[in-house]
Image (cartoon, rainbow, N blue to C red):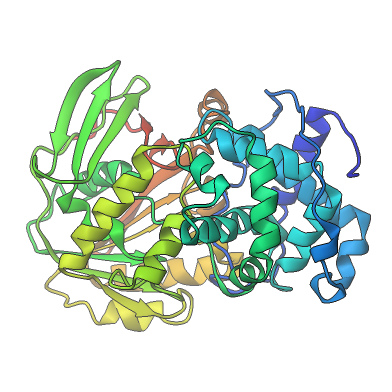
Length: 442
């Protein structure tokens, strides 16, 4: 069994792993969407741990499944901590099925060994738990009649762990294949609710045609922000609405905090939608779209429907997605955008998967172009991955602990060769709420 520890010891050890990532990694490596801790977070451990201890079926494990390092007790303990960290800080109150599974997995040594050995040897450990959930969810979607599928769809309240283990025993090879060849690609369109406010703020003084360019877009669904309907509320009262009234993608964002953002009154007119991703998703491929669905957490009714509706919109006119590396290929890609267009570059939960040197190269690439043309760079990332932005006060982040990893929305604008950088807001990582930081922007 993994080492038993107090909640705070467990969470702090997991936090230490998140705050000290492996120094060298590819610019967008094997998996890209784990919700890690903000650098300002502390004092975790809201929930008691009452794990359901169910053993993984050993007879299905072969010697080839187990890499040498899984025998190191510390590696398994760290993986256990990461599952507990996710249960406490991302799944709790949001995805009950994943919360329960994460707690159970954290207590099962053999299952932890299977997870560890199934991952690509170069995978960052912090990314492995969410990739494992996506890899298994993919097989659940491929077998809609299995018992665990009913639990994921909310049609059964049975203990998920028993049927989850049955699925792993039946789909072991396919799960390993997914983990070694796939990346987590969470194309969460709910983030468009936060992005729309940043786009509106950035382009208040812009009359030229807008061209969007996303770093790490996955399927590029947030490039269709102008085709989504977004309702902004405060204390359950309507503040503003944006986008087509008849849109099949309906987003809702609660405005929190003392400040009200500049709410756009008209939609965006976009000339072009572009993106750069090492493994772009083709919205016309059913298999690739199923992987996107597999990356959605179960138990959140609006997310699968929202994803499906956004895919339908994207299929009508697929975006231009370039297969390439954000560090080495961004310059060439941006230079293809006509200078007559106003360029808006943005990233959502992508810079975390580029190492520090790579992130600086991305920033330098954008700044070099900004010195010669007006543009905006909008980031929706954890603050530690955008060190060029002065972060919000730690108390703002701490106020929202337990409501998803608080994510900072920031704007870096170039106008006439002059650069300004602003932390605009703190928001839920999926855009459910936003705390606007900027006061009285004209």
